[in-house]
Amino acid sequence: MPGMKEQHLITSGIRARVRHPVYLGHLCEMLAWSTGTGLTVLFALTAFAVLTGIVMIRFEDKELRTRFGDEYAVYRGRVPAVLPRIGR
Image 1 (cartoon, rainbow, N blue to C red):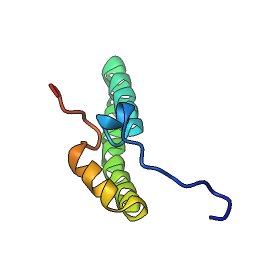
Image 2 (spheres, rainbow, N blue to C red):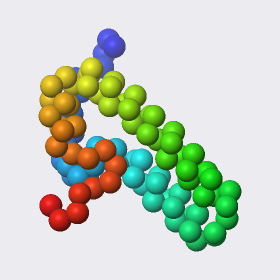
Image 3 (cartoon, one colour):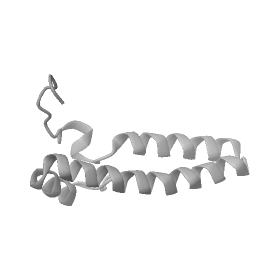
């Protein structure tokens, strides 16, 4: 777009551990509400959020691969999407 600054792929901070930290935060929140209240409807909403999140992450990964090319492909191969690796 005209007038837009050049974009760079950020791979430091929390993004060095997970590619989609917003989805991780949303998942944690949904699980907390579900387990805290024990309401079946919240467990159903959490399941729905996981399913739609999977679809959205796939679309975002495709768009980011187009935008950032091989740099994103390497990053994607190195860093998990939502759940961080333990012990690294």
